[in-house]
Image (tube, rainbow, N blue to C red; front, top):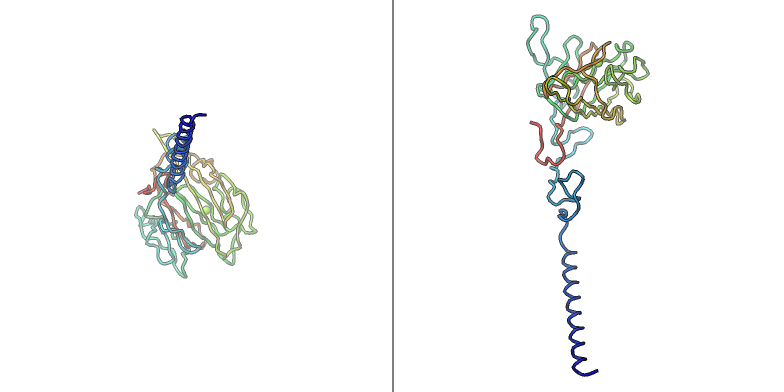
Length: 286
Ligand code: MG
C-alpha cells in the first residue's frame, strides 16, 4: 500500500468518525428535547383532534378538593349549616302563586323539614351537575314504608332520587332509599340506621330536547354512603306515583328540590358542581 493510499484511508476514517460524532450529538440533542409538557410528534387519538400526550392539549384547571366536611373550591354551596338563603318555597293557601323564603328549621348545622311547610327548592338552577348532600332519617323512627322518613332529592324539580328510612324497613323496591323513584331500585340497600348521617353523591346528565322531542334522555349515577346504586342509568322521565314516567320538554336548567313529605328529615353539607366537558380548562356552565 502506498503512502498516498494510507493517507486517503486515514482521511476517510476520520470523516466517518466525525459523521458518527455529529449524528450522536444530534441524537443526544433530540433525546434531551424537553417533553415535560407533552409531544408534537405522536400519533393522533381516534378523535383526530389531539395527539397522544399532545403538548397543545389544554391542561385542566386546578381546584382545591374538599374534605368530608367542606366542598371542593368550584362547588356552589347550597347549604353550609347556617341559613336557607339559597332556598325558597311555593306559597300555599292565600299565598298561592307566590314564591316565598324556605321555612324549614335550621339548627345545629343542619336543616330539618317542617311538616306542611312545603318542599324547598334552590333559587339557582342547574343542568348537568354533580350533587353532594347528607341526610338523616328521624329517630326514633315512626311509620312504615313510604311513611317512614320520606323525602327526596328532585333534580331539576322533577327527577327524584328517593330519600327514605329503608333501614330494616321494607317498601316497594323502586321506592326505597336511593331508588330512581318509580323506575329503578338501588342495586343494594346501604341504608344506615335512622339518626345517622348518610351521604348521597349524584352525577346527573340533564335531558336534551329538540323540536319538542327527547334528543337525549337524562342519565344518573348515584352513590349512597360510598356504595354505587345506579351507574349512568337512563331515566324514563320525571318521578311519577303509580304511573309510567314520560318526558315532557322543559328548560335546560332547573332548581334542586328537597321534598317535604310530612317527615322531619334532616339535611346538611349540600353542594353542587356544574359539570364541564373535557378540554375546557376555563370551565363551563354559567
Ligand atoms: Mg320521596
